[in-house]
Image 1: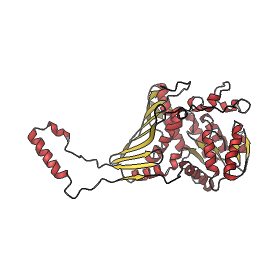
Image 2 (image 1 turned 180 degrees about the horizontal axis):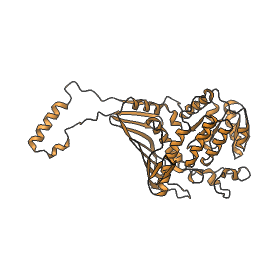
Image 3 (image 1 turned 180 degrees about the vertical axis):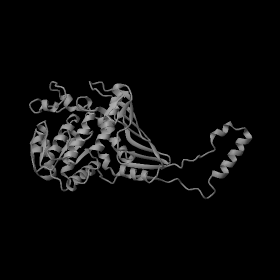
Image 4 (image 1 turned 135 degrees about the vertical axis):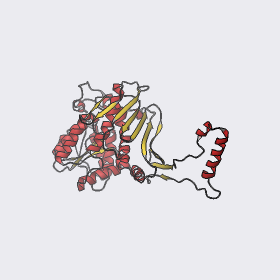
Length: 405
């Protein structure tokens, strides 16, 4: 395990409880998290493991098959590439990259070394999103050309106002290594704890939250490339605490035959919902695992209001004829069908996603969310930020592998 912070501690706990997977070493640049790692591992297995500040110690260990990586985004590429080159398979938290060009380096490292790389955005393994994909492919809601995803938070914690450990210091944290290739800065506990809010280390709302929505949408809709175009709106309206990213951002994405709207805020609590809008209905997935299918027949349910342009005699005749043809016959009406699906009790997308990774490691079958998939989603996140900070549309130039205005 490389990284035992907020997300890493939960991923580690889920991993060591899976049958057939054993954690044998843990790495973090903050020494107190070495103790945390062993508290987690011991609580699940009764064992303790070796710990280190140097992730390369894990890569040099020939007995280790794979690494699970949960570190700030600006370290993702280097650790993934180094792990692939050392012959290790890699599970890395989302988003896969911090900069656009990094994704292609990761893809090449995985290909060259024949390594499994899986990105940790769990909706790719969600049974609910899998069911939505199945229903859409069956034509349940007709042709889908529009998807929308919304989410809102309204708390300091939900807005990354994390409280650094009280004893954090340059003595128990390797600050210089933590900075990596980011600009040199004096030791700053707030940057360490709230790195998602700063451009040097994270991607803000898009890298923290957009990526989940886009992962589910790309999976369900069979998207195999970055969006063609993105246009963001929003701003930093409330959390003016030195952060460098907006606290409200909405982005419209253009894909071939598909428009996607992602709307996120850290200023108002709003339930997370993804809606697939089809010509014959709506599939709505709510955070927590409930999915509803609302069917539509796409037909007029009343005489067309265009008849207000008819003279009265023509309008009356048209409406009379319409009702005779379309009103339900007595005793023949039926309710319009719909369905509701929910997660089984105690179901976990994270557990399923980690299970999928370890199964790929053991069987050498392709990852469910490989580096190519992760790169397409990451590029979409980068495009949202590019549009916001350049105050223009972001266009994906596939031939040059870059975002342009």
